[in-house]
Length: 322
Image (cartoon, rainbow, N blue to C red; front, side):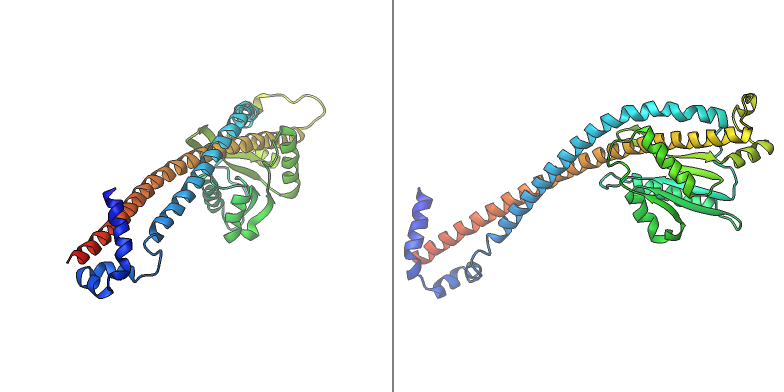
């Protein structure tokens, strides 16, 4: 009540106070009084707007984390079940990532959307490293890109090497039939001795393993067998019926590629959602920390403004008494 009375008294006597007398007592106060109206409250308003923006961002990141968690649960079971499709081929035909062939096709799998950490950059880096390893005077290496993010990165310096690009792959839930049609289109449009599929294998929400799976052409399989290379247990089987060994290898190669591609797409989708969950959780925590700092800054600024007003009132009353 006393402070309110002082404020009322100051307002009542304000027209009677000469600017010269106040300048003699409190020159710093006068410099603020002569500033444009509302300048003192600008800082608190800016901080308030910033706090509101950070709160809205935090709501969005929390919602995106929940959506990613829901999608991850739906995809994870399918990805784990799909691992049983391609594992028998590894036992039958072996896995020869170091095989030396002339025509290499690197199938890079990525996501169409961002905000999922560094899984897309990791796939692109491994693809570029594979291209350098398989380069040679008589060798040719091409890219087949699945996903918008890998396409955007590879097109900068390897546009002429991109043989085929497919986007919006995960717009709808994928099944094996759709992926097998996609694999058939890839096999019809590219010439290869070895297909190297680059993807991120899902391990946990916070962990994924960059993986390269190799699928050889029937000709490369026969050459590897003739040269004494490791080809699993294929030679221990007898071929029955009218099909020749090359026809069997052709069918096995196409089926192997579709199975590996199906598993790779699901594994990469799981890794994408897990990485997005981690990224959005980290963003939510950072937004909370920023909100705490902004709240402290706002309270300090507001308290400083109130203190300045009290000093002005007391200084004016002191000048009147003097």
